[in-house]
Length: 435
Ligand code: GUN
Ligand code: ZN
Image (cartoon, rainbow, N blue to C red; front, side, top):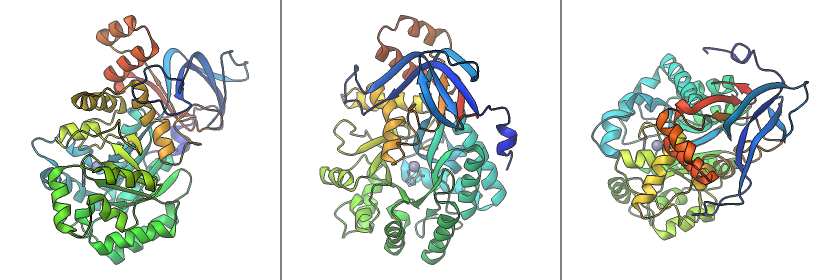
């Protein structure tokens, strides 16, 4: 471990107050509403933080028993939640020239093989978690690799930072190169061992992690489903219906299934804690099944544009939608950058994504979809103080744009379209400064 809690967070008072323009949500905003009662905006207010939790929010300056961090004139948001991102793929971000299946073979699998080495896994997890925090992401649902050490490194690194993290060993017992395949018996043993050691410890939670249908045998999918059935508090994460060639391959591999999604449903992998990345090429029945099972889709706009995967139908979605970077298919860990891309995806479909829908999907919406709404995703009393402070504008272009914005939505929309990690002024996890 490169640092301990004590070293990194030594300077944080137990009881302190944060000043700024507070923005979060009290409900889900309706699609298309630029004015929404679901938006809670308190200009120049104070958040009171004690022992890592929010204990008050008020207009009045707190008394002198409270230490202060004065960010007057800055935007204060809940830390972002990235519901789908790959730790070992930082090194293949921005790789040229292919669609999903070729991109996996050429770039992704070779990079993931290196994580068999424990030291490489630890170093990779450290860089990755610090990069998330530097982007304003304080909680994440993460793909490591097939290797146990890659999972242990992430859980340990997140615990050292106090972050909320959901991850689990990638299951792959076929159609993957040497060094990246497991087998059903060993994989099950490894999952059970790590569930016992990490799941529900502090802010760590375990996700049964099926890479995608093509890389698991029916026997492995059944094993994964049995793990989910045995403990309803476990998460499940996978990819579904991202790319047309992928969908065609799944149809060949599973001729008896009604659809790609049906492969997962048949194995018992769809439930309230399932996070399905992409979900572009689904039919109406699939979309209803996802909603009926209480699962969510992690929408990955930057990845979908970069890999040419397709345009996600967000406005008609009957299920919960969260926002995700999908780095290294995605080209930025920054969720504001991904919000900007999400707007462009909808624009290509003739739709418009409001700043409220985008921000909600990266905060409260994601938290609720993960059944973690009491803990993260908002700035309410009782929630953990996972908070980011943002400059409304950085640089002359954004400053000029911000200066002429009139309504709140206009201002926040310009922020989400132009901001990136350079706008991040401060980031707190459980009340402690981490970036
Ligand atoms: N489908 C299976 N594996 C992956 C992956 O690593 N990234 C993306 N974007 N899609 C996948
Ligand atoms: Zn992915």
